[in-house]
Image 1 (cartoon, rainbow, N blue to C red):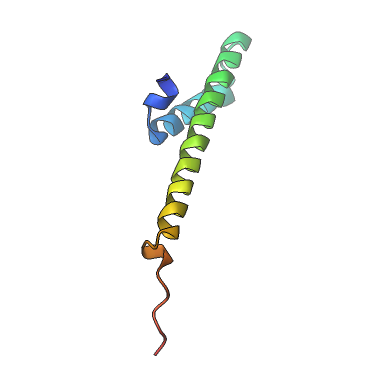
Image 2: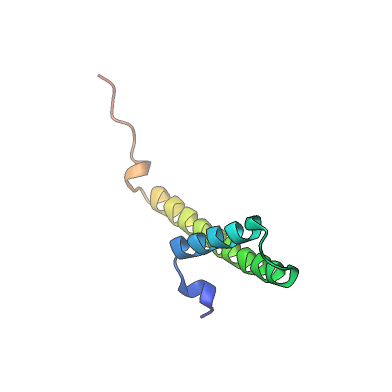
Amino acid sequence: MSTDEAITFEQALARLDQVVARLEGGEVGLEEAVTLFEEGQRHLRACRERLAVAQRRIEELTAEGGPAASPDPAPF
């Protein structure tokens, strides 16, 4: 299991925010900026993958007749 797989969505998002803040601050050298950019890309990819998994799961649940798939109540 890679480090990206071991952290939660919230942890990856928080770290991505930190990376972006450092890059936007302009106080890092070129090499560190490239390293931070690469790290940010990994965290962004991890967040997108977790969101896609969550979306697929929600779609599965609603397709299986979960609460979101139940018909609207009849009007009065």
